[in-house]
Amino acid sequence: MNLEYLEKMKVKILKIINNNMKEKQKTYQCIEHGEIFYIDAINMEQAIELASMYGGSVIKEVKLNK
Image (cartoon, rainbow, N blue to C red; front, side):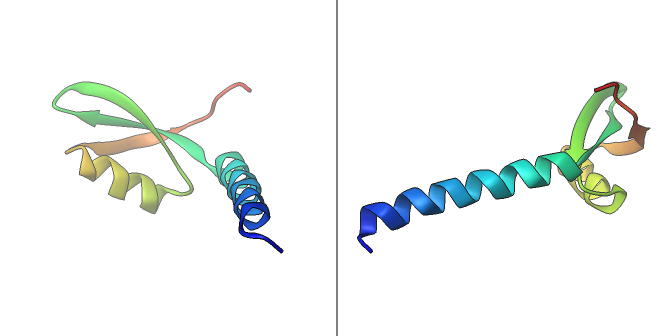
């Protein structure tokens, strides 16, 4: 196998992993200094961690119509 082939396979695998992660993520409503924003996370624990990076807090999980 050559390096170019392996690099193409790596890109394909990463795209598949990313798509699978997206499907399992949920949307959470957050607030920071009175401003509402939304983040996608796998679970509430991850949502809280991500929201705190923006100085915010998670309010609730949002059910989206897809």
